[in-house]
Length: 170
Image 1 (cartoon, one colour):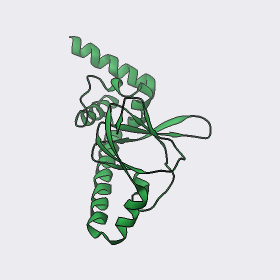
Image 2 (cartoon, one colour):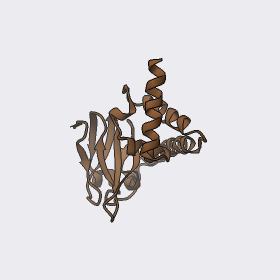
Image 3 (cartoon, one colour):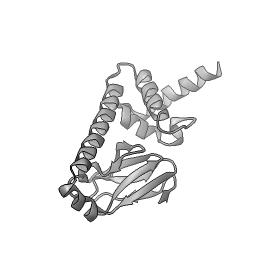
Image 4 (cartoon, one colour):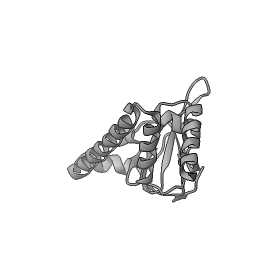
């Protein structure tokens, strides 16, 4: 299945299949009771989502939206869980997948622990470039979303992006 930039793969609270992201990048947004939306995760090629349902089914934690065009394989959940019962190799593959996601989250924590806001932004931009080639991070994320990922206010992100643009012009 092909999902184009801005299209929704699944919505928070729904239940359904698992998905294997073959190419592209997705964001997972969480809608809160007060109506606010928080970017909680970035999904990169090779991941099978939702992570919290790889061993047992659970409703979707957030809403998955394509940041760029994506190629996605739909995995039949009942078949997936049935196969897990006797397939130790598949269980190991899931463990490795989750390990990889934990390492990615450690990188994000590293981005957040940078003292300099400019360095936080630079590390996020560098990390994104390893998965998708975009001329600017704002091609795929809003300034609010960038701020949510690196623990900064939108205004600070705006100021940092302007400073980068000015330095590039010099």
